[in-house]
Image 1 (cartoon, rainbow, N blue to C red):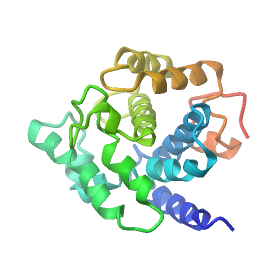
Image 2 (cartoon, rainbow, N blue to C red):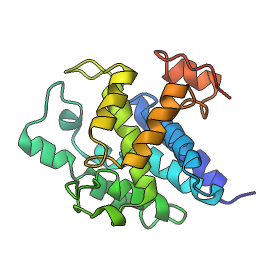
Image 3 (cartoon, one colour):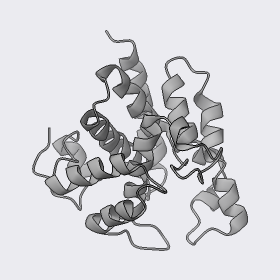
Image 4 (cartoon, rainbow, N blue to C red):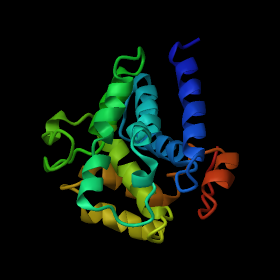
Length: 213
């Protein structure tokens, strides 16, 4: 048996439990992981690296759960101090997982998924060439999911409007090649190919994608 498979199953189970604690994040880790694996395959990522990307996608927001719930789940826009606190979550997440065997690649995704190609991301303001491909993929998938989900202080965007926002910020906030693959798969109905029918019913009730496993 591939030694990474038990780790994948464990992390999947844990993230489902964690996500379920907040009605606004139900299914979020699974969705982002499924999108990320689909995009990675389209970009030609070797199969040996897909598990690291899936793990990084599932764990990317782990550090948020170490931050006070009344900040993370506040039903309003964050003030500057609260925003600065929330922006520590990639560092917290990296500290939690980077020494766990099998999670080395995932830890770099956790650490870097809020970096930007223009160098204005956080927490390290990395230049574009130092941001791992897995993090480039997860940042796009996580942004799409965040834009389309309902929040206490705003309604989610329609999926086509979220894709337009990704394109509008391509090259500055997001990597253009990842955005183009994401939007193409979305428009062709293939973005949801990694989901089972049961997952579609549970976690994507607003979408109708004809091509599912």
